[in-house]
Length: 443
Image 1: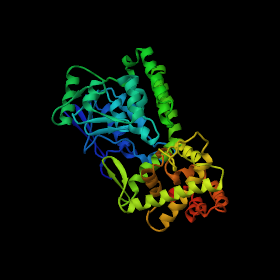
Image 2: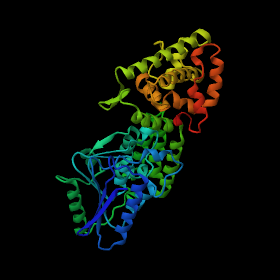
Image 3: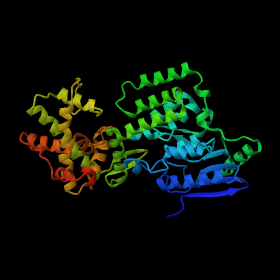
Image 4: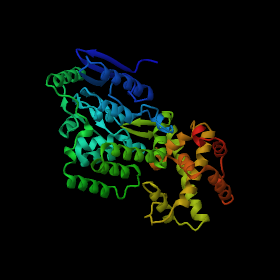
């Protein structure tokens, strides 16, 4: 395996370079290499400061999403690595270029000082995967930027450019020219001026005005009152904990919140869609201007078939049950669709039973599309539903939603419904998924 972390010492300054293309993901191998490098930095007396930088187009896109499906992080965990960097007895300067996202941004927060080139961006987009920062980010970011900005960044998942990050206290400087050279010069200046480490965990200035801090947390909670998402509410809890608890206790609070998010159906669904978007054939779904769109003609043909199946199932509910059009529209909107099938004004309703039938019809049609070779796998069906039908992303698509419902129970229901209308006949794909421990994910 190619060396993914490079290390050299230049006139007393250790230069640590991430080199794990294409996005410098913080995989187990990369974390382990960084761990050993920073242990060396700590033990070698001739090293007086360290610079953490990266090769390639960006600093780091964060954790390897595939590891999120494992029961536990392999050690060193991202949090352990950030704690090790922060506890270094020599000043550590993080050098941002391109983007630092998620765990990559948490590495920056754990460093003692941060510089960037003018084009750098920093963000914590974990919420888009139904998660929250789990390497101390919910505790360090409020210490550097206060509650209002910390909540805004973590709840929105948006990144901010280096000039704004400097103004808001997340950076110590913007360097001109080569960012690595500027970071080394910054580190040498620290040494010359006798400035040592500056652990973020010890910062209290942004927490000092307890009344203002809690007011921002309370406003954040009010803004989230109607949000159907799970993770943002726990982010607010963690930001509050940053001011109320000692750092170690706050980290334990964050870890519990992160574990709850990772096990939540929303996170499973959002991570599923993220991976599905990257697996699907570009002849079906293509990314344009930051958004995924069904292609013409192949992708649009699949979407049209699924839309017809959804409408047929909704009409069958109206014709054969006591469900009226308004209740079906209400169920779809409550579930997360932007609008219902019939276009009327929805009335509030408990729509679990309705959505169970609509999801089943989409699975049946998706299975037919897959059997005919128009899509390659069940996750393709989910990606097309999200981007073609407006299926709520947090539900993961019909196949992912069916796994959350329970495949065996859904098949049993479909067998009964098929006596009313063959649109609900259980497909062979469902039988095959039930045989696998991983369900549709195994097909």
